[in-house]
Image 1 (cartoon, one colour):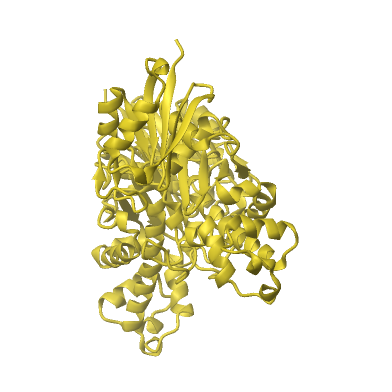
Image 2: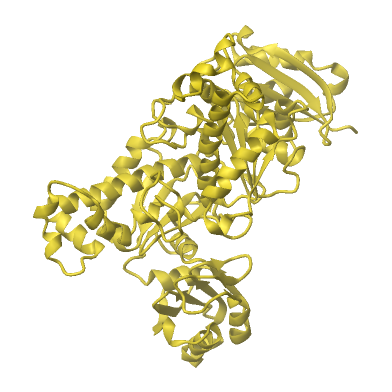
Length: 307
Length: 307
């Protein structure tokens, strides 16, 4: 029998879901708008209805990645970017509708497990996935297992403070890593970083410039954009050096938006990390780029929770 | 049969060893000067010879805590504070002499396991022990097990950098936590911290003042010493808030020299940590003081590796 997993990635804008087999092949995939649903029951029911009937008997489990998804409680707790408020008993809802075991975790943990099952960490039992999107998420793997902490909330490295009295964060504190190292952070740097090259940058000719515009211009020699990338790499690379003192991982795996520029960014982050590293760790920790970018990483990550 | 563990704590000055049972009762204990021995073989042989013959048949294992002790390799690797250089195959040496299984780890990890087996973490599976001695050591427990990392070198939180371009550390880098939060760090603060109260402090009347003198004077109203303690607590408390984003522990357990001042220091560290904490962690993480201070923690920690 062909055993299939349902992977559901709930995002603030879209919810992507699909069916995968143990090899990571996606047999079916679909995207719906999260905000079109009045509550989570309607969303999950619609997903169930949209899955082709001929596959339904092959489903062995459901994996859901969601912002603030809690592995222990099976709930989404007060996710600021989702349209539904409060504590949502998503595991319970999914198990009622699918009538099968459901595992929930946050999106960054799902990405880390996806990396281990299908991606660039198949050879690793000690690594940390850093997801660089709107914010910065992290999934920490120790001895082949996600670190959840006592309450399911471990791995919030986006809120690790890197600069005393630094940039104001949505969390109400200052200097959090994600205010610098994320797509949003890179865009903030366009406005907040000062440089003698700033006035001559082509970034000001772009309407509503995004992080990818900064990377594109930097790779094409725009000095101010290059300074932004160096600044971002400096902060992220040093943070990785600090994280190493914690769990001594074999690798950091960068995933998402600004990681997709690949070697250009990876090399810079790696160089800063090595320079800042405690001597016992030097030349022992790799910085890798996720290999899930070309596949549907969100669905794969969520579905990998099943295996 | 009475099952006994040998616990050996190798320090730069003294090596303390003893015999304990599963309840943590110490049946025999002795201290010898580490520097009196030309090599580790002689040290371990002497320990073996000093253990009373009538207990030798009850020994079920040997646990050794040592600076730079590596759990995976069973070696001590380039420990700067020990008289023997290079890589020392301590597990091999001990197993040859005792003819019984030996477990080695660094002193801070041994303290963390000791806390879980005999001390103030018997109820916990998620916690971090912070040992505040000459330096700052850490033992990180996730899901009831020590986090070793890919190479056995996880948990070097003393070298987590808290201040950009801060105090110079023995490791060659700057701003490491242990240059502030340790006995040595507190003594440095006497010289390096500026304050209008400095000139009037009684600490200057103490010959070669130690951290305990600073604590004693602070508790008796010396304003400059109080500022030093507040400064130390500020840096340590904020560091604990950062560490929480990593593994979301249920508690931090403070052990060693400056932790022995007890509630006075604990309350300050706890208050700073809470103030700096990401909201999802607020009021969920305890700061505890080790309960092993009145026992022989070093021997207990090392022997707990056996159980």
